[in-house]
Amino acid sequence: MSEEHNWASRRTAKQAKLTAMQSWLNGKFGQTKDAKTILEGLIQSGDRVVLEGDNQKQASFLSQTLAQVDSEKVNHLHMIMSSISRPEHLDIFEDGIASKLDFSFAGPQSTRVSQMIADGSLVIGDIHTYLELYARLYVDLIPNVVLVAADQVDKDGNLYTGNNTEETPVIVEAAAFHDGIVIVQANQVVDRVPRVDIPGDWVDVVIPADQPYQLEPLFTRDPQNITELQILMAMMAIKGIYGKHHVQSVNHGVGFNTAAIELLLPTYGEQLGLKGKIVPNWEVNPTPTLIPAIESGWIQSIHPFGGEVGMGDYISARPDIFFVGPDGTMRSNRAFGQMAGQYALDMFVGSTLQIDQYGNSSTVTHGRLSGFGGAPNMGSNPSGRRHSTPAWQSLRPDNDPLGKGQKLVVQMVETYGANKRPVFVDSLDAVAVQKEAKLKNVPIMIYSEDTTHIVTEEGIAYLYKTDSMAERQAAIEAIAGVTPVGLRSDPAVVQDLRARGIVALPEDLGVRRTQATRSLLAAQNMADLVQWSHGLYNPPAKFRSWS
View 1 (spheres, rainbow, N blue to C red):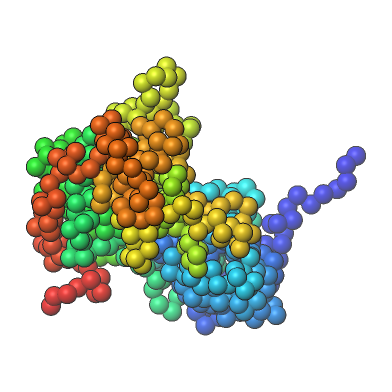
View 2: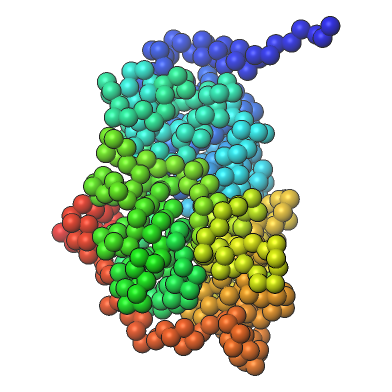
């Protein structure tokens, strides 16, 4: 006979910890002032702890509380965070509370992450895509404790997450169904929640927060900051990519280049006769710069990763476009959004900090370990996809009877970044960062073989048309401007690439540079967006420049 085995050891340990904390809890509810004691009692040294904090929504009260625990009682935590966005996310490593980190994105704290790796105060497990990180919560990074945020909670512990559901469900489920402890900070305790986003029997502890969770308007871009160079690039993209490939479904990354495209659809796109022919379906946050395109009838549906500050009333009034519940508020889901981006879209359009001579790109540079979030999910060509669309088929090779289509993966970059450094380089900084951070692989965001188009102010490189790495390099050189990579470009080779449609300059597309002016934008500033929304959009204070 086999030895007697306790097959419920995790459950037993969880119940023991919760029982030991009963004097600090009233059912599931703890008091705000006792939050530190509760965390010290429920989190053990060495635990895997998921702290909710994606690009926008932050469990900020719980992250601040975690940073205050006694490192003699709680230490060597293995932290799992989508986004390292707040100072205390890294303070816990300097203070000895945590020692290892798996993450996806570290934009606001990217410089500090790099410094901490260099001085040995932070050990990186790996840099993940969002989907990869979520998936591992169900395989080999199963959490002991998760710390998440909710808008409202009722007396039974049912959670309402409103517009900003985001990654909360995927985090909670990983713990709730494998005997991890689910701790929630709530903005408000109510008698009845407007809708149940997460049922109370998945929740172990609720602590009212001392203030609402942090929420960033990550995708909001002020039209007044869009440049004429970005407008030129947007015009080339609309005519030379969106229209050419009959793109129906798309994701836009964060940036002014994509904001320019959104604001040109009702104007330049209309001039080209593309209304009703391109981009009716979107997987993207409710970006304010999409309002003119929505109001002009360009867009049929938008499914969001997360909410966007100030867009709530507008979204509630447009349920035909957005995913809105019976309660009148939007439902976002970051995991489902990433899944849609990987498998259901015709095209991803994003930007990056560096592109090498072969077309590999990364946002990991010297002194800045920013990670890459969801871009590798959006910007990859999943071999498991089987359904086809006209856009996918337009990239199908003619000479292969078993060939299949491909997602359009577009990188839109100016040849020199805001830091006045060349975007196009012979070798990515990420190669050196891999050695410094002791990563198993070079942290490339989007690989060359997945990149189908690159757009710069010089023109478009149709990389999917190239038939060798040498030809791919030549196409990249042709649109890399006066960067070291671009200066190697041979005029005769460029002329041949243009003749064969592998490279297109503005004049090849019939795009007039003189037309690329700000007057072409459907909205010139935030006030215009408010007007387009019929007064329903309420911009965050930092974007308001009028009384």
